[in-house]
Structures are given as structure tokens and as C-alpha cells.
Image: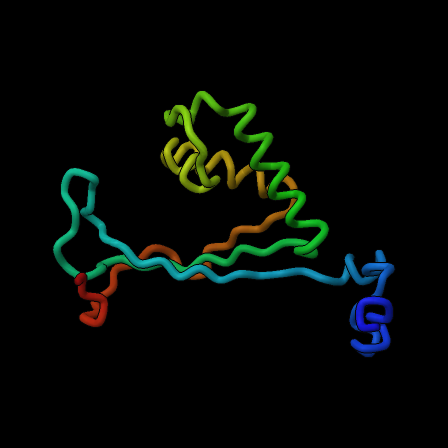
Length: 139
């Protein structure tokens, strides 16, 4: 009964018709990312002290379920197809972040530019800055 009458049992929040164009146009999303790290860490020299840098970035876009997800998947697929030479990893199955991250800052910047071109916004809320926080010790 619940599956046959979703609008009745959800007071109209869900229906068999899906969202209207107006509802899609009026919906958006925003995620806040807090990053902490080290100013002098390298793959050859891992950090041995607490974090000393932080930044906050906002990522937002249009309706997430139907619109933004499709835009992000298509942008990633197009990026990988057109920019494969930037990505040094060969063989296997990869997560999008791992694959693009393997290309370094230039590949990441190119992907962010591609996402921006389709309406995904990246805003630096709090730029990279020094921190002194003893609560972030390793181990």
C-alpha cells in the first residue's frame, strides 16, 4: 500500500511523478569542507608534528539528485577522456579523486575549471592560513 500511494503516506513529499521543473529550479546544495594539513610534508618526508595549516572551502550547485549529479559525472568522464595524458596512473580501477589527484595540482585545477563551467561553484571561505592547535597531534 505504501509503495502504491507514496503521496498519501508522505503528505505529498513523494509521488510517482517525481519533482516538478519549478521544484528542481528552486533546489540547490552546499557542502563545507574543512581541511587541515602540514606546510612541509612530502611523500619522502612525512610529518611528525601536529597540523600547522588550515583552509575552508564551500562547494555548491544546482539541485543535487537530478541535475548536479549528472553534471559532475559527465564533467568527470569528459575530463578523463580529454585529459588522460595528465594522469600518470596506468591500469586498474580508480576512484575519481585518486585518478585526478595523481595528475597533481594542474589536473585538479583543470577539473575544478570544468566543474565551474557547468555550474558547480567552489568558494574559498577561509584561505590557507597557519594554525596552532595542540588537539591535532598525530597518533
